[in-house]
Image (cartoon, rainbow, N blue to C red; front, side, top):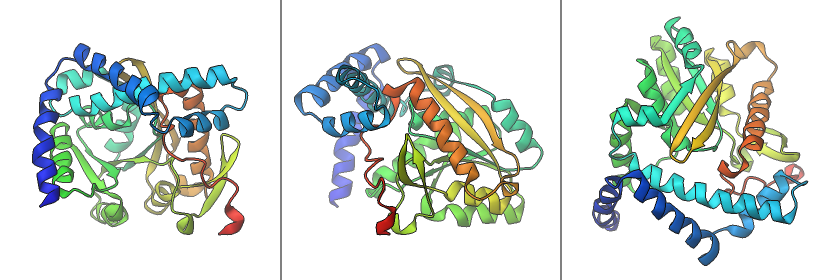
Length: 295
């Protein structure tokens, strides 16, 4: 009952904000950025620590400047998620452009399924726009929201572009069923955050720090012979993004174990270095660094 009450109270405000024009939403994002960074100090120490660890050569001034830019991007991300609720597909596609996606289509048309690996860079929430560039089924792997009403609302809303949200706990079962039925599909994974330590199968370097990493996307690719692409997502300007796709491996099983995952993390590092202010620095990505000996 409480979950439903929260849902019906919040939903109208989401729609009202979503109908506002981008210029007004950008003004609101400026205000939100100021509140988060200056008034409430929302995870500011964590953000600055993460940036300092990733960029040890940065001066205190550079860290502060990058942090400030991050909060503006973080606020933009918040209003863009809301705007997507009512953004029509034509406008969505105009604001989210792609290159290299034709290569993905070529492989899909050869009756071979594909995994897209990406980091929490730029606006990963707008990757639902990718389903507008393909006639094949696109599944985004996601963590189910605790509030079942918001979870159902999000799944229904993302379906407007043709996107299917696939909960993490159903991923392997679903991919296996598609493989058995020879159903060609596209799967999107965000694989750059910290996994549960007891389930960690690989520790490797990320920004010079020895950390646990997710290997699920690679394991599925190797087991079911899925081609793997990396998505380099850049912020062109406020509320405009461009995704460039690069083939990592068409036959991952031919590679040594974990080579693909390490390739992916290296690509993420390069992307972050090009636009450090658009990475998700509020996440405790380095919290388990150098802790392997304890597990």
